[in-house]
Length: 173
Image 1 (cartoon, rainbow, N blue to C red):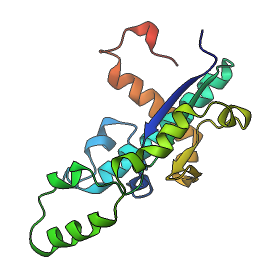
Image 2 (image 1 turned 90 degrees about the vertical axis):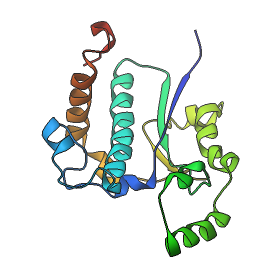
Image 3 (image 1 turned 180 degrees about the horizontal axis):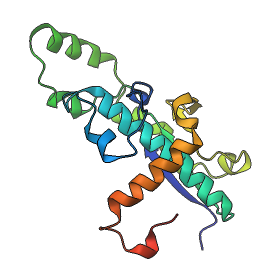
């Protein structure tokens, strides 16, 4: 048996920019925002949901005295190929290409996530669980993610969405 387990969720600062409902907890909310699917608020909603899911999993694990640490992290502005997929033209494309020169490398963007996944002692000693971090291992509190009732609703909604794909014993209430 391993002395401790780690789950690190890759989130984003986009989690601060979402819909008034914060995260969808029903099919109507999931599909009924009335905005094009390309709107970044959907991305922000999904990243906030990751943080909230991590907080809910942490609460569930603490009830069973688990030694599993679940945390979320935003890697920062990293120059990845995701920017190549944006269909930008003209001045916007030139601005993005200029700004990318100041972005972090993939290796630099991975540092906080690696730290959360591999740090052998400090995270355990300080009981760092269910937290959200920005680059360089700085904890940031996203006030939107602290609503425990919404965490529970998101957990239940997520379980319903995957119920037909995950064997029943693996779904935890």
